[in-house]
Image 1 (cartoon, protein in one colour):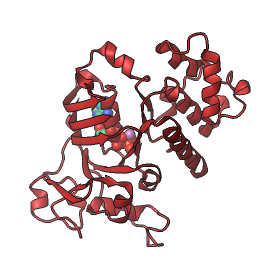
Image 2 (image 1 turned 180 degrees about the vertical axis):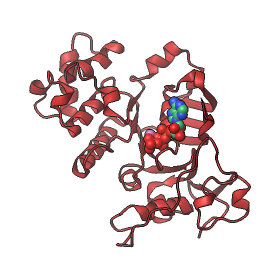
Image 3 (image 1 turned 30 degrees about the vertical axis):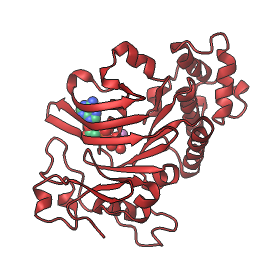
Image 4 (image 1 turned 180 degrees about the horizontal axis):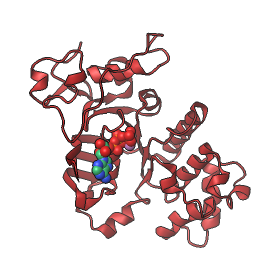
Length: 318
Ligand SMILES: Nc1ncnc2c1ncn2[C@@H]1O[C@H](COP(=O)(O)OP(=O)(O)OP(=O)(O)O)[C@@H](O)[C@H]1O
Ligand code: NI
């Protein structure tokens, strides 16, 4: 359903070219859930924004292709792209306030996305109530006229999901949908995304810095570092048998029931490199406990570690 091929995104900034995404290739089958995991600034949101062509085109150099159901999204006219957004592919943005407008009631905001695509004409109200029900907003009839500030964080996120689902998209892009929420609410939102995937076969790409959360929901995981995928594979393989030193570092930094066995939580020493001035070779090498000479010279080639399991590392771990 979605094929991202050798996607690179460079931003022209006052500080020079920022290589936000380099050579990212990802594949998503219909009805599947893919997780993109990495620290802040690793390029996760940029990948999602590239899919929906929400990047500021005049300040961006784009390479590669994104094929959605046989269509090259980069080749679509702006008008054709508007028909894709929300209807075929919709996005839950990282900051809830990008989506929710404080001056309109929740019902109007959900109805708005129906109107944009001319769906459910004359039956918008029923559809809005149905959506609110579906995403688990209690007593929709009473809450439909309320404003965002009258909703708790978790309920706001449910409303945002209702807006994203209004036109029954086939692909849902969820950018850190639980970050601002406390742990119990996080788990409920993950459950809701799982339910949506199961009942509507909606494909989902989940972006998060939380590997445990991604492993809970996703079937496949891609780990990004400094704009590149460093390892990808089935979620259970990434959790149980990670091969890249960065993935191993991420794993030891999050408590995972049954995986870390109460091991001491560590964080990876050092900081994410400046994307305007990336180190040569493997961008992780300055922080990598296993780095050797080749790591500082050449960008790693892909290494097949198993079925659908690939990593980019000169020091393939065993
Ligand atoms: N419009 C833009 N103009 C210039 N640089 C940008 C722009 N958007 C993103 N960047 C840069 O691209 C890099 C990747 O950003 P991105 O938001 O994709 O990371 P992320 O993995 O989503 O991080 P986070 O977890 O903090 O959301 C960052 O260095 C960011 O500053
Ligand atoms: Ni982001």
